[in-house]
Length: 156
Length: 156
DNA sequence: AGGTGAGGGTTTGATTTTCCAACTCACCGG
DNA sequence: CCGGTGAGTTGGAAAATCAAACCCTCACCT
Image (tube, each protein chain N blue to C red):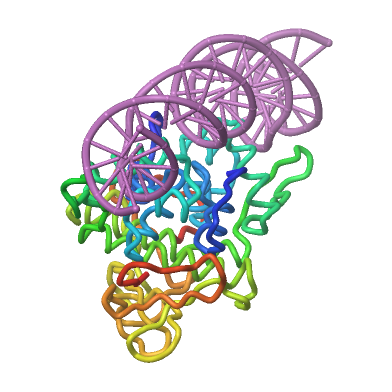
């Protein structure tokens, strides 16, 4: 995700610069599931080996994954999520939720996630302050840096 | 995001096939903010015009955006989010939240979002059933379709 | 000692995408 | 008639992706 003169300083863009390249989030999905070995990642993500290699390097250097030796002689490695990597799981969950609902009508899901409370997880984004589920109409963008001249009714 | 033989049927991958290409989510960000005109999108996302054109076509065809005529003579268009598009905002919020925390230490944020409850929005993903914030340790993946052979301790 | 196979990659060359600048077309304002 | 705006399209160079082949280190079998 190299050159891009995004005139907008933006954490969304910055995060995508780390995990927005093709396969990166699928790699993270697998690593969070515990499938952190190279050949598993090739099989489960469908990424070409050279691309996977590049993505892993990038994610390790960005502090999202770590490379761990799980066997000397023969040397074998495994990738695991860092704390920062685990904190990207909300992104995976919201992506999954949208796909489950809009691309599969909520039926025939290939995988579900069970929450410790007992049921299938339905991730809901709430406001940390009041605890209410967040709806578009309740949001107002507050530009803080130059480059953020809003024109429209504004909400993100 | 053409050819990819992802051996895993997965809603995350499917969603990324819709909005995972470079610039797509930045376009959605702008459209959700109300900045839905072509030249605004060029300026605010930094996307080359031809790429932007392709992304807009794709997002409209996928039902994430609609193209609206806001002036005949001269013909001028504007892109707006559909309901499905608005429902992708949780993805944007979780991406923003991660970037704010991990890429900027939570300081000097270029933009904040205010929630109707009064404070700056801190998006938290919770379990729809019990309402608790979701933590990695509380999750268990439940494969439902073939292709989902888990090996590790498993959680997503 | 030789063959086979797994794991974890790198190399090579063809194919796709992206990038960027220039160009179009339709209209409006002076 | 001239310049400018909005919404794109076009053409060619540069970069990223793809698939397959290759490499290296060991372990195991016989």
